[in-house]
Length: 173
Image 1 (cartoon, helix red, strand yellow):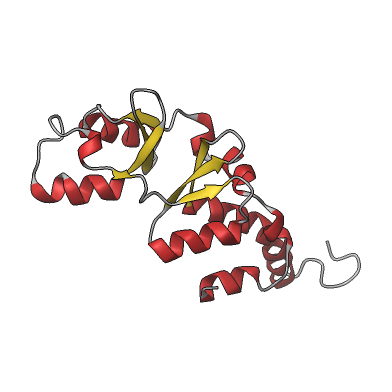
Image 2 (cartoon, rainbow, N blue to C red):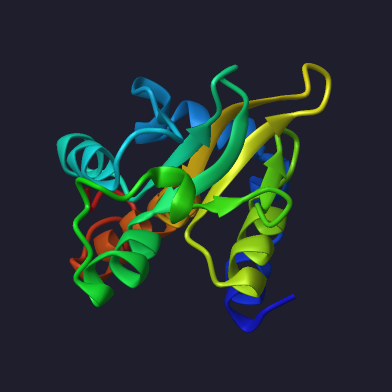
């Protein structure tokens, strides 16, 4: 376990029980269509990144099966850095394709998801349902941190109240 993960999980709180699926349900990716066809241009992907304020898209083939992921990092490293025309480059030519995709199973814990992201130096994970054999979502490192911070909010509020002189003794509130 990484040092960062140890700090977050050392309190023994209930984060081990929070699944990738429940994180996805609170994610910005839950409310949008995060998939894009591999035949689209990189410019179309860029427009989706901007319109939805997201950093990654699941890439699909003609049968709507997920075959890859395209991140903002892919766009920068394979289009912008080389001055290519993003209206001509197809997504399939710049995306990360299977079997190089790192996924989270829907029952993976936050800790498992964080470890996958940290080990592979990525910021997004597709959420995979083993029963249906299908991608059911996507989560970002920001979604995981948001979930961790939810668990820490109560402690932060109590410490802030204590510093402000609230709750230090009976009847002080």
